[in-house]
Length: 461
Ligand code: GLU
Ligand code: MG
Image (tube, rainbow, N blue to C red; front, side, top):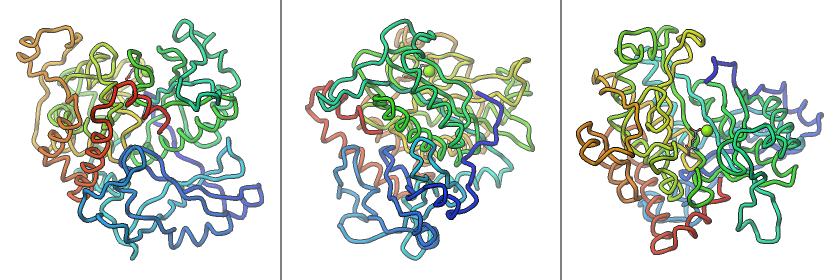
């Protein structure tokens, strides 16, 4: 992970300037409970009004499932009636380099009278950050984003992934295979204000990855949404199609969107400079221990889809067991410690069971809530695990209190609903809507071939 950059879209001076520069529309984007971005586009001339009053959208987006079916299993949103307002966060307005006729802005969902709407995921994260700041704590967060690039041949409607490259992983020839795309992507990310550390050809055929520089958590979630749009635009411009699905092909590596967080007090990173394990301070260790304690419920939010469950397997560096380790890529929680070269500021915790199916605001809210609770309860982490716990016997794992993360929607929901800390962070209304959506996804997949389920998630994110 990088030192903190001044991350975030650079605001244009005014919508007049944007219009003069050829922008005709502004797309207001939010992410739903499936991690799927949804949007409304307003003409540039109507943006001022939209910024003041928002645009009307149905509250039922809170109960859209992954396949656009609306579930009415959450009683407060049990009818087609009602309207909420989608209000752009104007200071985040940015012209899209890859779609120069359009600007992009994240939105917040508010009640018709402008008050807090309990299903607004951005607001859920903001509440956790207020809690953190009352405790004198600041957070930084950043995503690593893996994706597969496929040739966008139209003949089969995208039913297959045709990897752009099938040679050695991580090699420069892999980058050469997507030369024009990679050039545009680096340019567009920079112009769109998404600072990244590196871009590389990843392990899987046609798989790539970049990591976004750390920023405050709300900005980090905004940047993750903006980065996806940027990738999709660059891919389309080069006859490619990007799949962000947690698992794209059976039996292959998945697309992790590892979530890195760190916390500081008065500017000092609490994950370094202490005398705890791997140099953590007592509070840093308590943060990590809080994440570990609530891991099954956190992962129900950070890797919540059927495709997520297919991705989380031992041996794939995706995190399958409840454990932490120092730089251990098979541990769900990988501590990246301070080093003499990088200094104390870079120390962070990476959550591996995290992917595109997570709403990024809810994912960070769940992580921060669990970590803050760990600090409030003064927890201490167990010994780190430096091996692959997937190669241990059940007895060995049980002896270290290491459990398999939930492998079904039912188990995930059980973990989430039994966890009062994560439920409270999400709020009771949103938690129940989230449950209804997951149940709807599970019902759709019931009895279907796993390969068909996998395919149904391939192009959603
Ligand atoms: N592709 C792996 C995953 O599903 C991660 C590989 C890595 O550690 O970069 O999370
Ligand atoms: Mg990777």
